[in-house]
Length: 325
Image (cartoon, rainbow, N blue to C red; front, side, top):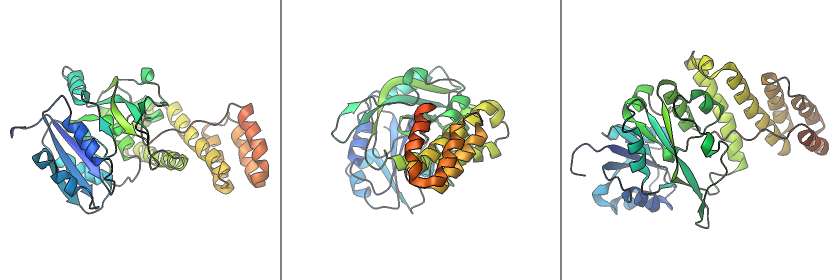
């Protein structure tokens, strides 16, 4: 970089986790597209500055009091000057052609504000392979995707490239959200701009204990419902844009999944509330009423509950709110 305005501002937020950081930074340095700036924002911990110094002027480091990933990403974006912003989590990495392919894809489509890619999973043993996607790659849409995105998050944050103009117009990440802040932003962008998906595996999502747990799925499912309710309240046209049926289906699936998860964890009162809420969104699913009734008999009803699930099609899958895997 020669002092002129770069094309891409790469923003990496770090909090405590340093074990994967060098590999993430190296994957940016290895990009075939070289006109970028990398801004690393450390959110209150003290693990990244020494690593950033190893890279000299290639990495711009800034520290902030611990305020959460949304504020850290917003700060990094504001410190940059490029017309495009790319977000890379500190435990993920990119394949070398990632930025080049994305910029080529939007070269002739100035209306597109968000372009994201397919991904690989990297496991603890170092192996990389395609993982199960709730939305298969062939079914990930491009264009005006608000309805599809409302139904299910299919965007991996570390795969995104966002037009700065759009990012600033919608207000960046919502700092009031501590979970699913990325999903919230993608929906807000998709309401005003087209989105493009590149069906190439150019991003590597690292699988480890902190980000792949049943409890994490449950937490994100409930957080997404709260975020979506907030979006519906702030955006009066959202329900009409995505369709009342999509709203009902999305909330039904989240509450049904939460009900089953709480049930098998032995939280029967909480499970019953979720089953009844899910049933209100989809009264035709009578298994939810049966499950709510079984909550009253506690662990003794678990064999019957398994029969209910087998007999009427099983449990709705986890919605996958936090990441689009």
